[in-house]
Image (cartoon, rainbow, N blue to C red; front, side, top):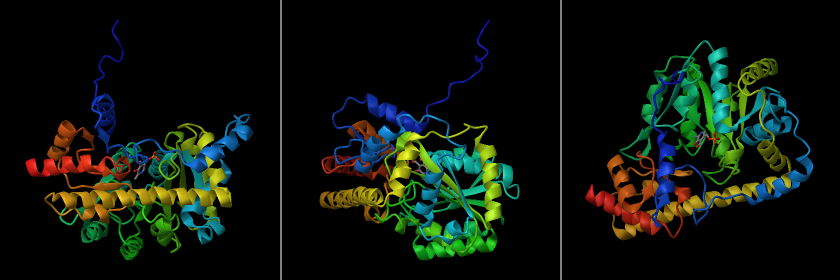
Length: 405
Ligand code: PLP
């Protein structure tokens, strides 16, 4: 007989991955990948942090015999130090045992476990508000858990900045109790963050309406170069004693992409609630993958808990951040020098790994076809994909695109 799967239709490749494939097949020596959100060296090579390399060598001696199962919630030490990293060493919420943290499969897995937990245990509201636009996988992660997706205004194409008024209006009209997904810093894909006074206004509005914050932190340190500074938005919300969820990713900040290292924290009002929540998180995780892998989280924990290694790591984070900022300046200067029509000042105003260039889908397609430059059709440029040697090529392409189309 025929296949029992014969009715299944082939769907197109996820666009960002399709772009990776197209880039791989492009034989041009000039090809440039500004699409995929990964950090690269000046020469476009993958970057393994020195501190990670060093810790991994040490661990291999210790750990090569340890292949037992972890608990459902992962490495306890990793969880404790992850909460400290995001909430601060002196966080009252941690001291009062009001935070439960579980090791998950990177940022994506942390978001998904949080979403599953809310779907099951937060029946008051099954709608998540997310920024327009947001990271491409956000809607998938939450709708796969059965939550409804709505958006709040965020990016203003007119100013290439934050539509703060629109954001406040949309949060104001959200039903009380709704979940609101917020990116802690270095917003993907726009490169636009609220200022701290704006965060404070967002906090007041959300708390007064009883909206539940779910923070996604994938780029801590990639805005200011300082890990504590970039956690301020979250710490503002936690310091008022209210509740929130936090998904942390170590993909970019430790360069541990493929190791899938992340944590979900749920900050609760009391220690008792937190312990009940943790017991239920185990029941969410257990039927999904039972328990997480060891290797990457062991590397992260070793770095977080050792003062010298932590300092070494924070210096490397700062260096990655410095490189991103210097690429912004170079690109902006080169566009000015060439006299490319348009105001490009948003390139240096945007923060984090990405800049929302303002190039339209036709211009992006033109740059890919004529200049072998790959980026998503929304015009998001991964600044980490650029180096001093490739800036002129990108500038030629942008110049040609905006003067032809
Ligand atoms: N959240 C944001 C805002 C991201 O940009 C990314 C990755 O690009 C993720 C979450 C998920 O990354 P990972 O699952 O590798 O931690």
